[in-house]
Length: 233
Image (cartoon, rainbow, N blue to C red; front, side):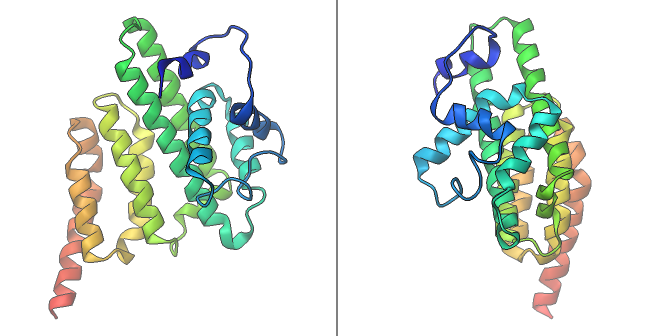
């Protein structure tokens, strides 16, 4: 990830858009460009990385309407049996994109503090708008009680990685999403999976996030104790 890749994110001057960037922009307005049928976890690593970079570049400038359209148009080709897989793939790509933006912002030393605050606000709003769009779209299937636990844990791990990179900057929508995913999967997690999740949650250092996650961590510890007792019995 180079600094030049993000120049278009923070400037309004004319730029040439082509390749995956062009396809991403068109996906906001049409169902005939990027969709689950032509870009998914079976796609090449290069295609997935280009998709992630394009999301990182343009998603912070999406309006709420564009965010909803982007999700709907990406999912349009996913048949019902593949909807959960498509939704988690898109969510993972967005979390990877947010991670790349955060790493960039933390290393862009030439930015003045006032500009840097503005850019963090861009990211905060983008994450909040994306999660709101998820909850109001077909992507809400990620919260189904029978959702694949492995898919959910993979995504929760990425959300925790983002939270750790955010540090003491507040993005409450991250913890809201994380807690909801834990709530719908904790009953079906194995002892090993719960232990892993507790270890990941304990690695978060920012106090505000630790406080926000205290209740769900206690619920996980209670669930872990219960499952261990059942195994002994």
